[in-house]
Amino acid sequence: MKPSISLGVNSIAELNNLYPHKKFCIWHIPEIDKEILLKIKSQLGRRIVSQHIYEMGMPDLEAVSAAQYEYSRNNQANDSVILGIGGGSLMDFVKVLRFSSLNPNWLNENLNTALEKVTEDCKRQPLILMPTTAGTGSEITGTATIWDFKHKTKHSLFGNQVYADFAIVDPQLCYGAPWILTRDSALDALSHALESIWNIHANDDTRRLAMDACQKICSQLPLIKNNLNNQAARLALSEGALLAGMAMSQTQTALAHSLSYEDTLSNQVSHGYACASWLPVVWQLVLETPNNHVVCDFIHQAIGDFFESPMDLVRWLDNLGIQSYDPSNMTPEINQRISMAKSSPRGKNFVGFMQSHENI
Ligand SMILES: [Zn+2]
Image 1 (cartoon, rainbow, N blue to C red):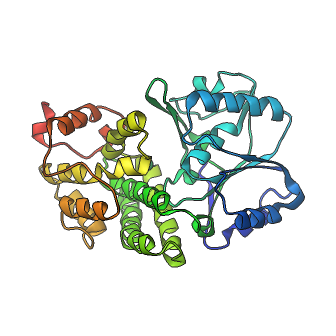
Image 2: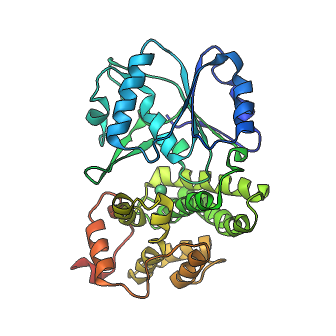
Image 3: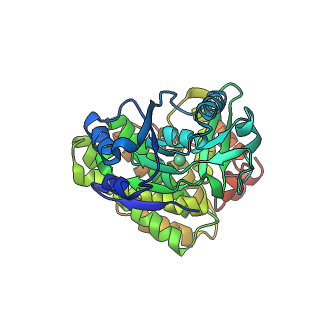
């Protein structure tokens, strides 16, 4: 079941109305603005039974599994709502934590296969997500990305059961976010929007959402670079990220995401940076794919006001501090990466490859 969404300045007040008779366990990132945290806590008052700080960074399989088991052991009898306040990493973490089980291998046994039903030895707690970055869209997707940095692999906990119950998207939570975090999150959202356009699963609904998202992000992100306190731009970015997430949750991501994972696993490049650095190359591939005018037109409608070509996008990203792979110089390394990614689940969602890449 997809989550109910509250969007807008002061939508945190919605907490007053949710699960009025249940206790709450709060998980939040350490960087959260103290004032806004106080506001959230005052909405819940005595319903709060515990407060935890998430300090693990990107969720690592071994660490998340151990934390889930530990939390389950201490909270098995507890029927609390979990409230997760943070970026994509925290939200993915609490999506796992809400499954309370005394099986220490629960996470390993349920990864990478659709979780449509929970077994009786597992209790699924209600989950509310509040993003502190405008980007990942994790608050509205039925997927938690879990990394195995030891074995350099990426895993997903996904399925109908993984969706949060409520997503509260209040841009006030993003006001204090520093530039690099704001930029990388927004570029992740831009990647979600573009990836859902050059996607074999695209439909009228996802294209409309994605085009709207692209325009909000491309117009507003440079404004925030010059003024981190631009609240109107923050609201537009929150809206853009949400729209992109809604499009992406229907189509899934595609080639740029698939290409990005190696950069994140090998060099721990942030997810948004890693995805964005591949966007010009992937756009170039779309342009070189024969009989692809319809998709090219949709891309033009989405970002044509800002960039006429993939090289324009390279320059725009460069101005934001992102060094992208060069679409005018497809090196053997780039071609080899594309060749590897094309057979991956995300790569297969991409609308097409030019003929010359077929035989690499
Ligand atoms: Zn992403």
